[in-house]
Image 1 (cartoon, rainbow, N blue to C red):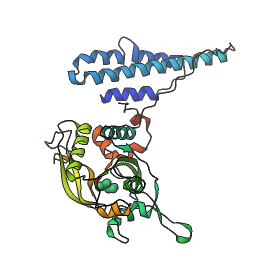
Image 2 (cartoon, rainbow, N blue to C red; image 1 turned 30 degrees about the vertical axis):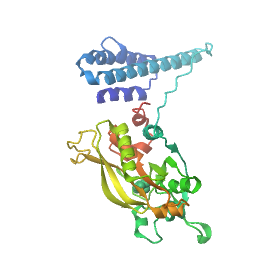
Image 3 (cartoon, protein in one colour; image 1 turned 90 degrees about the horizontal axis):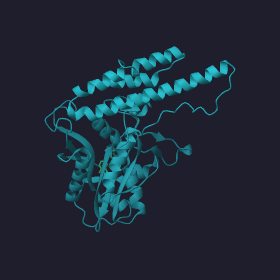
Image 4 (tube, rainbow, N blue to C red; image 1 turned 90 degrees about the vertical axis):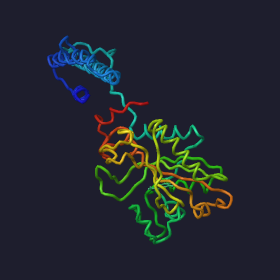
Length: 342
Ligand code: DAH
């Protein structure tokens, strides 16, 4: 498959400046003994379960080669006309523009939203530049409490040293906005970009994406949370997926947990992706702390609920086998074109 990818890259990057070069390109890919003929002949040796994906990729290569040839031919013809003083044929089609594809982060976000929308979750939005109240205080991070250091924050200094403003460190800030403005029952998802003051590496970035979830109603229990998250995990990672909840701490939930799913790659047996544990951590969750409900104007005596938050890049890395977080924001078309819409 990677040889195929090399061909796709080569075709995408190919340029020709003469008729001879175009002809060489055509022969290399399309002649009877050319690369495509070989690749099609190889089809019978591909195992049955991979044949379809292989066939689709070979076809994509063929279409790309044909498009490339067509665009070169029209450019060369136009150039020939221009140099021979002949008329320029204005009816010639323009060189085709390459088609774009959806960004992998968008694909995963849409998938998460679609899974939860099937059980009645709406989508809410909030600002990326946040005040201290929505990002911290309302979420039960007391002033000067060390829990504020759990997330390295980009603060913005205001003229005159008034209220502190920050780039939101998590989408939990949108929970507060939704609770402040909506009467329960609330069932909402809050996808968006978040920022942290971290050195950029294969595993950390100064910005990334999260999806927050919030469910508030009368009589909502931990069991409701567990079942909702099990449903999500099975829709996302497959019907056999198991989940486990490990006790954790977040200021805004009590009790709090971190949720793991069984590793989709080794089916729980242990591999290098799950570091031989069979489990992958995918989100934080818990019952919304009564202090948070109170801060947002919801009566804790009457209502309860759960919240959860997950990183979209992390899920995309697991689903697509991407090993470096930086690839998602480098805009390298060779990376981006590998993800087709679902
Ligand atoms: N805000 C947390 C983070 O960025 C994730 C999170 C954990 C969100 C637990 C939640 C939750 O809503 O209940 O690390």
